[in-house]
Length: 614
Ligand SMILES: [Ca+2]
Ligand SMILES: [Ca+2]
Image (cartoon, rainbow, N blue to C red):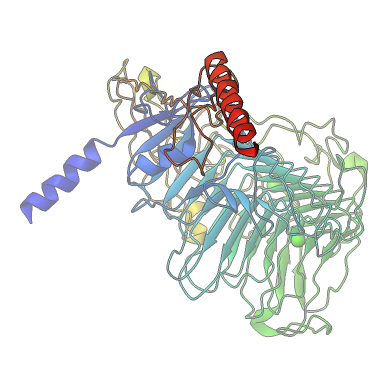
């Protein structure tokens, strides 16, 4: 027992690091100096706790690991603090361009993930093709009872121009799945023009489906725009999901938001259709210019909690359509503990549908507030909200749809357990006067090759000083990534192993992010989420492997029949049997001497005949 324990501790303390680069070679050692060529090779050699660093540049796989996937991630970590990490090398941007990938015609993906406790960070994934009528995925996290594909951490990914959902998480079978954190990810410009289910029918930004048991998943700080179908779609999901600080813009359109495909749905947040009546949470989120509804219950048989959202210029702002389980042809009115709860939401303009079966208070329509442009710091946006994120991966600072100082929606809300400034919560996604809310800890991705790791952040900025914005992790009980943050592998040095990042403590209710005090007011980040693990620097040896070429000569296959004096054919095998493969011998012509002998013989025969006739 002691021996086993010691071995386990030793392994944890010496987590390996591998490197992948576009100029690498899968036969190399996988070191910084001699990197692998593919993330697949990194996966195949990694174990729980290890980190695979992906260097910047473009990777263009042509042959997939499987017929339906560019890369397959089937290995697993063992816990939040012992994941297998696939991380962009600090300061660099790896791009996976799957446009040349040969795929089968069934449902396929660029990244096919069946393992658990994995961590992907900082990767750009694009152009997964569509050889048949099945809509394909950028990342396809697919769990079964045998392989739950649970508890994965998707962070700061940029997924776009996929012929289907950008990030699709699905759990089939009876096994527990879920428990993911999707943090600061973007999914945009996805479109499936040739879907067998209709033009543009399946290309969501984020899809999450079919999970029946297991822990909740959190989506935080994510954006979806210009996806032909929906921004976020939880259809057929039976375990609650928490979605917060997310933005959905102009979904239901293709070609950079300019054209509505005929079968595209076009909802911003499609938070149904549960048949068991589970309750999703949707808060502090923004929907703008989506073709159909900004926020949509999609026939769910149970209500969700919709708190402090802003819905602006969507086809419908909030559509709480409910149906009995399994029968979307009917509309029902939810009652009792199944009703939707809506608080502090903005509809601009107020244009909702199917609002029976909703417990609604303190929303613009309840308060007889008619929002106007003057209520907001800005109601137009020069693509900033679709623009680059901040250096730490959090959402860009915008004024779009933030409240103006004299807005009639300031302090008009009610306390739903979210941080607020002033005498009461405001309406909408953005509390007036609050310092930009932290998005929670990001990964301490440091220590690689001597680069100092950026520590995990316990909320990037503090909430308002007066209220001491509480960490949000605790309110759901599942944020769980607490504030202490990924520390840093501060040393790293060339070829030496950097110190591992420290593990973020679990989020607790109201816990402040530890490093959230930047700025004048200090205080805590709203989430206090995580830093997972910073990992250390890489090892330095670099044996290179020579590739021998094998050259085999081939002989001539035909043998010419000699016509001259030489009777030997050249090359090839010379069969003894003249009947096969050509003959190596020549046919000799009679020589001049033999002609003379022949003539002499004939003369003798003629002479004999003449004598006999006589
Ligand atoms: Ca959809
Ligand atoms: Ca307020």
